[in-house]
Length: 288
Image (tube, rainbow, N blue to C red; front, side, top):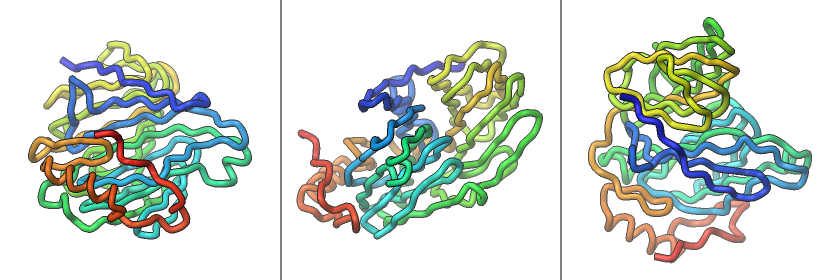
């Protein structure tokens, strides 16, 4: 039987809410995905936006995808990139990287909407200490399909007979969905572990109603049918199971608890380096 997961909601102020669907008691991970956040939808007044100060990561890749708005990414590699709707930002932390995420100046000045998802993918143990990197993939480079009221875009990995240009480290299933009312989509068991997150709209899965802003853990080896009752935005994600249990603390993910302890010491010592253009302040290490 499928399982319905209610995300934990965090109000970050100004009407901006983030819903964390993974990890939960029902699912510590789904395929390689160990962290799933639904951002918004939110409407920022002129002069307001998001300001996620510099912070570190190890052992994972962050995947950012937007339906509305813009976010400016900077990191210790010197990357400077605005992500827009339909684009993919893939940042491989590997042995260590720090980055910041802020609203760019123009949308901040004008007021803007923001709606999207950010996920973390745990790197396989053989790649946990790989060199950090950042790659931006414009919307036009992602494979997509429009059929019978369904618009599918493969964010990362493979799905529905298409493959994303985003480099992945393990078998990955990550597809953004936009469905018109009454459109149906068959979801075949392409990956061992799969989940569906409904960002917006009313839907049914195999004839049963799904609430918006919830996660559904799909059955292994089972073909499901998704039907949109209203305009629908959703995300499919999953892949092969993790190759070992993962420790998670703050922004660090690793198969080794000692490696996380080292990352704590490195952040306090400034060993992650500085972010060009955003080096005045940073998020301090949380209380241990």
